[in-house]
Length: 179
Image (tube, rainbow, N blue to C red; front, side):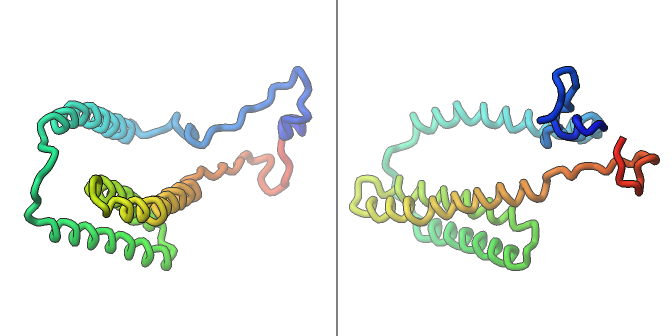
């Protein structure tokens, strides 16, 4: 590689400057066909599920009663909070251990916090408790969820950023020179 090709800023007008490879596209040419088929089927399943959820949501919006008496309210909320507590605890334990699997409970915790904020506020509408629910959502649950989403994104980027492959050409091994 010429010195100019190494530094695109100093390339002449007729020299071809190699484009950097995008990490998302790195290594696609030699992918396993079985993995590609599984990936395609997974994406198709998700797309069909998303499309199927649209009419279901409309049906629920039209047919569900606007008011409903719940018989297991305490069980529902205590169970949800135990699930949230478990996700928070697992995130803390795996984080202390610096285990890369921390992304799973951290992501689950973030999603549960968003759901908790949504249900707290939407179920308190029309009551005096809506202000406390909104305050907890805006100042506690949603900021913590946003923080966890951000941290998961950073962890995933650091774990799955492709490393540049070494140049194994025989004439440059051990000499430090590049052709």
